[in-house]
Image (cartoon, rainbow, N blue to C red; front, side):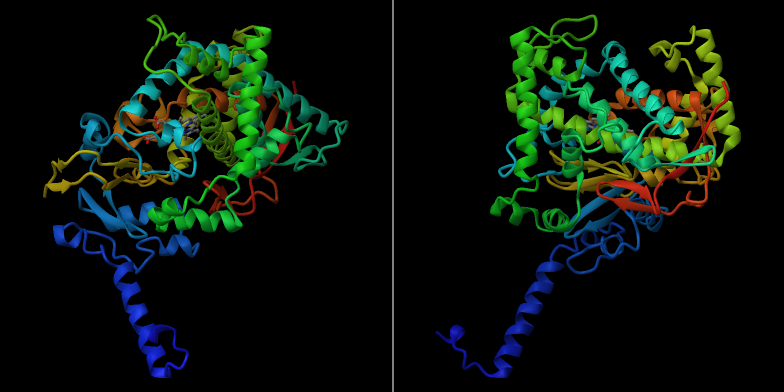
Length: 528
Ligand code: HEM
């Protein structure tokens, strides 16, 4: 057979290479006329990588890529870019965003597949990955677990985690605690890498609130739950290559049934959840946490507030494991990122920090020295600070929607969208658009004061996404972050120190945003 004949001449090999190169080029650019043939403006793609080049070369981090795409499409209600070979329609116009995500939601109910379903039987059951009716049923089943009254019952668990960290910091301050965490004492200050610190807090919060186990990751820095969480969210080395391959050629990865989630992690979380459920059932233990609510959903006894039992669907064990892990994945890094950026802004804006501390002190006094659920939720300035941090540094820079039924985009010019096509809502860019937020890079909590917040168009402020598919855990996330800030600032003041990077340079670590050099701050003990 000529193909296997090693006596091929040099020119034969050159021809073969040339042919392969040309064939690959055509494959790598095969659908790059997707937008041009419809006269839709788009960001020019490069072969294979589409518009992702600057992000892959680490010249632009994902929020910057979202921003530059949005700016390049200025003056258009929508436009295109390419995520590798996948054409993605970016929505700029606020009415279009509202139509896709809210009014005509039934045409765009799904996200693009986040994981190869065949290779990930547990992971493909997570709410975020579910599609169509199955998503509707699961969302309706889980929603009662996130109402205000359920948050109130979980408040006590979160307060315990906050008490643990304040106690730990006080011990470090008095140097009675040897710690393996990134906390050092320098003069009157504790020097703390807050990303590490807050990640341990949000990890403990999810451990107790979602998995029903108590861990203290500051006192036991290498506890198994924490280490598994780190492993789960580690996106370096070979794992990064697998994820990139999945984004570039999802069908091939699906076909090869390559698993993106290491089996030992799935095994750990599976036995953790199943053992806890078995112990609770055996010993009749009832605990005010998400696992208990998932167990009730499985039994069909989970109540909507003030209404009947939700009987939308029966959960299987794998569904429960999947949702518990999702709460962990969706919650712990996003919330710790929010806490880090809030701390940064407070440290570099001491006037804002003092005003917030005054509010905390007064509220504490009014509530008899106790941080109750009502006390934390009554703090208006705290809400303004957290809202402005979420505007300036949204942990999710964009969200996607997948078209599930043919749709005509009612814009000038109109556009036909077909099932399987993907759309993007550029959260980060909307939050930084000067026509919606004057002087957008300035940290100004006043934008969210009672007098000003009515000027904000709801479609320009989307830290938790938008419409029926928005974040189910937003109340929980806000409670967890506000409570941590209240506990911390009632005892300590955040200070800029020589290791604090000012101004910050955003970098991407794994799924989330961080800053170059780490979130180093000084903590000064407040005089009582
Ligand atoms: C500051 C913290 C958080 C931020 C900024 C955030 C943001 C988001 C965003 C942008 C989405 C996609 C929404 C959309 O497509 O419109 C989302 C979805 C989701 N989030 Fe969060 N989230 C946070 C914390 C949490 C927490 C603590 C939990 C659970 C305990 C959670 C659970 C979920 C789930 C389950 C979904 C998928 C919802 C669905 O597909 O129906 N999130 N989140």
